[in-house]
Length: 95
Image 1 (spheres, helix red, strand yellow):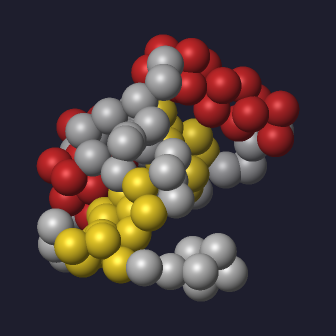
Image 2: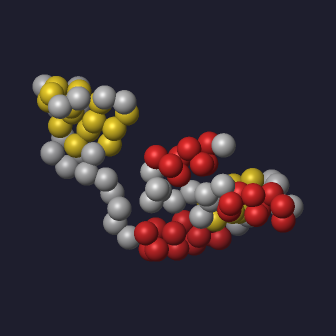
């Protein structure tokens, strides 16, 4: 399942399921597979916003130092890009 894969790669990433499947078995399965919250449609946007804010309060600042995909990593704080261990020289517009 996608949620399990996401959870294995980014353990601290909050995951909220937005779904029409409101059966208790579906909700339990969602939580067992790694969801932090489960919201059944229809829902009020204010409720969803409150749930997102609550999750963000709980996790605090977990912003990673680097973003990565395969061998490419980005240091958003210093605006640098690396391929493996080698820095890639980019102009500001390329970045």
